[in-house]
Each structure stands twice: as C-alpha cells, then as structure tokens.
Amino acid sequence: MEMPQINVLSKIDLFDDDAPFNLDYFTHLPDHDYHAITLSLQVPGLQRYHGPNAAICDVVTSFNLVSFGPLNVQKKEDMAEVLRLANSANGRAFHEQGDIREGL
Image (cartoon, rainbow, N blue to C red; front, side, top):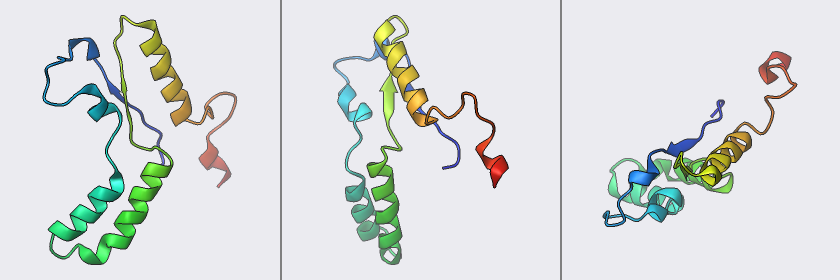
C-alpha cells in the first residue's frame, strides 16, 4: 500500500457490447464487504479472520483504493480522466517535493 497505483482498462475501444458483463461491472466494483462475509463463510478456518478482512475491505472501499479507469486512446476525455486518476493516486505529491520517506 506504500506505492500508489492506478488500474487502466486499455483498448476499451475493442470492448464488445455483447460481452457477458457490461463495462460498469469492471469500472464500478461490487461491494467489498460482501466478499469479506462470503470468504469467511465459505472457506473453513477463515471465520477467525473475518474482523481483519472486513476492516481491510472497509479501508479499500472508503478510500476507493481499487478502481479501474477505461482508456480509449482516441478519446481526449479518456486520456484526461486517466491523468486525473494518476494525480489522485499520488496525491499530487510528486511535484516540488522530495521523497516523503526521507523524513522518517
């Protein structure tokens, strides 16, 4: 979690509208709490980790840490959105500042 990242769905112009899942399924992920509950109920021995798993899922959901941005390189709006995602991921902290870990 130390390094910022963005997930880009490139070549979105090749995405087929008749695909089994629509584009919204990939760009707006389902509820993470549901996955934590399902995981703890279906996998033997993971019930004791339900609390930490739910807490991690809450952090991921609250701070929108996992998301996917579509990119069609032929659309200027998509390029601007990916740039916005990159700026948001790094907290706009990489300009005119040194390495934040040097002060630790």
